Length: 445
Ligand SMILES: NC(=O)c1ccc[n+]([C@@H]2O[C@H](COP(=O)([O-])OP(=O)(O)OC[C@H]3O[C@@H](n4cnc5c(N)ncnc54)[C@H](O)[C@@H]3O)[C@@H](O)[C@H]2O)c1
Image (cartoon, rainbow, N blue to C red; front, side):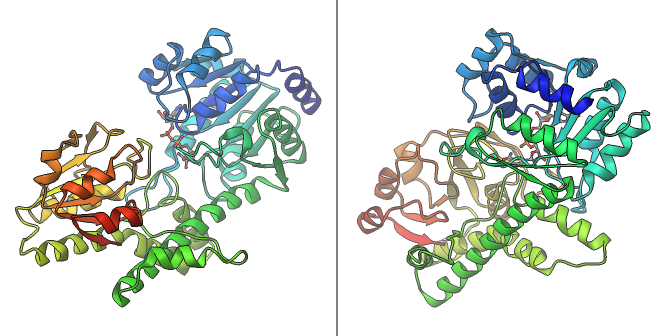
C-alpha cells in the first residue's frame, strides 16, 4: 500500500525529497528538509542556481550560506538540471513561478512544464505536492490527469496534494518551521501522507478536505491583503485631501484590541504574490460567471499608487518652483519591500518610469539591488537600465527631491533629513523625531 510505504519512509527519514524550482519558496523548503536529515534533490532550469547550491552557497536572503553548506557537506542536498533524477525521489514538490500573462490571465506554462517532467520520469509509489500559488482546481484538473495519462492510479500508484507556501521573505520572526502549513490532498490518503511529511519540518499542520480548499485558502489570504492594502491606500488619499496624517490615524486605530488589523499605505504593491494572486481567483471565478468587484477595485487603487506618488513629487517640486522635467530625483530603495532584494512588480519601477517619461533625471540607492532593468513592453520612459549609486552627501545635497520608495534599514535617514532639500516619504520611514528635526521639506503619503 502506497500510503503505508511512504509513511514508513518519511518516519524513518529515508524518503528522498525532490523540489522543482529552487527560488524564494523552493530553496528554504529543501534546506529545511535537509536540516532535518532528509535527502533532497533540487531541480532547476537555471544552471547557475544549481551550481551555486552545489558549491554550498545561497542566493536567497532568508537562507544562509552556512545552512546550504551544512546540507551539501552532509550529502543531503544536491541540485541538478537533470530531471531524470525525479525517479529517485519519493516525494516531489513543485515550487515553480505562477506569473500572469500580459492579459492578466494565469500563466500555467511553468506548472505544465514541471508536470510534464514528472509525467516523463515518475514511477509508482511517489507523492506529488504542488506548492505554487494557483487557482482552485489546478491540482485535480491539471496535474492529476497528467499523471493518470501515464496509466498510474491515484491512491494505488501515486498520491497528490496541494499545500500553499506562506513564506514572507525578509521576515526573521516567521520562517518555514514556525508558519502553520495548510495541506489538502486530492484523496484522503494524499492529505494524510502530505500532512505527516510536513509535520517533520513544520510545527503546525492544518489539514483540509481537498486540494481545492487549500488552493482557495492561499488566494483568500492574499486577496485579503491586496484588498486591505487597497483600502489603506484609499484612506491615505482621503486623509491627505483632508490634511490629516494617515499614519497617525492608522496607528491610533490599531490600538483597538479587537476587530481591527492595521494595514499601511504605500507606493503600491509588489512581489510575486499580492499583485498577482487575486487575478488567479478572479479569472477562475469569471469562468463560473462571477465577477469579483472587490478584487478589481483593489487592483485599480493599488496599481494607481505610483501615479499618485509621482503626482505628490510633481506638486512638491512645483511648490519649490521647479518642474519634474530636468529635476534630479534620488530614489531611496527600489526593492518591493524592506531589506530584501526582490524587484518583481516593485512600484519603484513604475515611479521611476513615470518620472523619467516627464524628463526627470533619476538616480537610485539600494544596497540590495545593483541594477534595475525595465521591461520595454511596459515602459513609457526611456527604459535605460539604472545602477545602484553610493549614498554620498553630495548626491543627497544635489538632488531636487529624494523619494523614499522602500524603507531599507541600512539607510541613515538622519543624514538624509540633514542634507536633502525635499523628501517624499511613501513608507513613513522617518520617525517623528527625525521629522521634527529635519531641515528638508517633507511630504508624506
Ligand atoms: N516569493 C514569495 O514570497 C512566495 C510566497 C508564497 C508563495 N509563492 C509562490 O511560490 C511559487 C514560486 O515562487 P518563488 O517566489 O519561489 O519564485 P522564484 O522565481 O523565486 O523561483 C522559481 C524557481 O523555479 C525555477 N524554474 C522555473 N521553471 C522551472 C522548471 N520547469 N523546472 C525547474 N525549475 C524551474 C526558476 O529558475 C526559479 O529559480 C509561485 O507560485 C509563487 O506565487 C511565493
